[in-house]
Image (cartoon, rainbow, N blue to C red; front, side, top):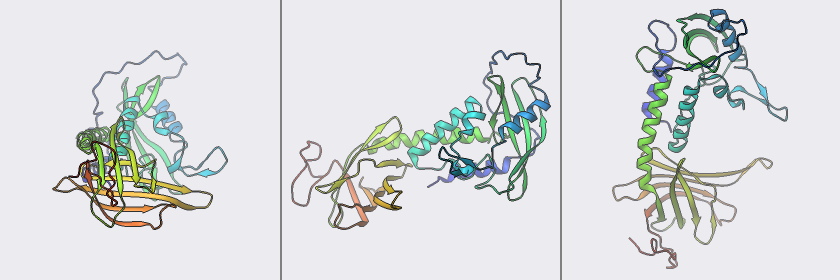
Length: 322
């Protein structure tokens, strides 16, 4: 589920692409360029930059193949184009923002910035319209993109490691460029991470008519982690993943049998803190060891766990009812 603010930033980014008047690179950090072997090629010439962009975009919008020869469309291309052709500072921001979104359950982009769309047409193409404002460390390139129609977009380049790399897909004079969006995603994500720390601990089911669930959450380097997710005396989920977006906690595990093309088991929690401090919401469970599946409401209370048969977990934290 994507937050409203990141969605608005994404819209701003799409609208701000194109039109070269007054664009600036938002970063102001200094650039140290290593020595480049004298090959007789002027890498700061318009001709070379055009050639470099052709190389970078050569494989975009085209199918590739995996190690077994199966066709893989561009959207699922295993080749990490960002790592290969983006500047180091841009790629570092992208990785951190993706990590944050993995913790919060957000979507960083709902479109593909390489193809300028959510998909690509069979006749997708890209050509350089203009190269300008070339300095020792930066340049701008206007691109003509054909993808279910024609449009113009702009990219900012950064000279590092002896060549040109993409430093922003939507440079903008007002500061709302792609890197700003990544930084804002990270900033909001770090605030959400602090809220997530309040969820660390044991959570046990409250009430009748729902699974006797015990959930334990811990905070790790990658946000909330599930260290225990068990249904008393029945079965457990050992690979459940947690995501918290600041208001809703998601816990999910899905085991899919590709050969049989069917789901072996699944576990889903969609919970929100209420005024009493309990997590309330929906639970869906399907497990081969269960006598029946469950799909309904559930309430979890922190540091609370009481089984229906009056047996209590041998833990000083969970032995007391609250």
